[in-house]
Amino acid sequence: MSTKPRNIMTPFGPQVGMVWESLQILGISSFLTQTLNQPNDFNLEWQEIVDIAVPVGTLVVVPTVNFLMLAHGTISPPEIDPLDDNQTFFWNSADHNWGLGWAQVRSSEVFEPDFSVSPPTQRGQLEVIMHLSDYNEDDPWFGMVGYTLTFLGQVPTPVQQRGPIPFGAPVSRQEQSARRPTGRRVAIKSKKFIS
Image (tube, rainbow, N blue to C red; front, side, top):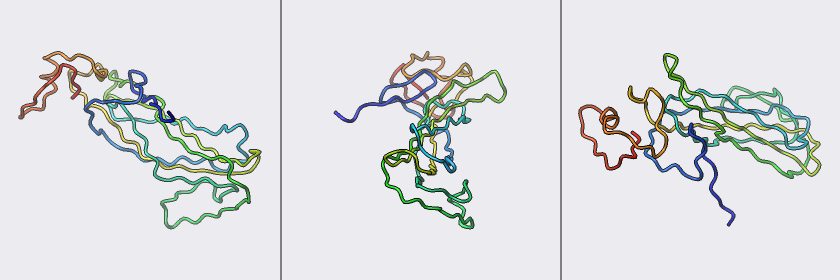
């Protein structure tokens, strides 16, 4: 089999392959990471660890790539905004074969919320990797990848000020009642409930 489950990072450690819980969309963010001009891609070493703020209550961060550029040569200026229609840039091309190239954005860490500060905060980390090489890895190149992050989780209630409830954790009736929205009835079918 060539398709296998991958880890999904959560504040409670990696979940293998799937998170099948009822989660809310807490927010989205959009980023662009650029390698700037690189003299070569020896040993496929380019990567960046990005520290990000996430909405309090985030359990999972889902990156979605929506822009990608990898090219041999250099670009002037070395850092651009591809969404700016008024910006001009020049590609100083290099005639090389595409041997190996890829871009990857993944959520590498989601930390538990910090309720010791007011207002509470929560952090996460991304790992961004880009590579472009011909057969001997000695040619100049540059790359950029744009991506949107979707933050999934649960909005904390006063009962949860100690942090989010782990996946599948039993929840007391008192906590279930505290999480119910006021003014409407909510059917609870399981004690394993995340609002």
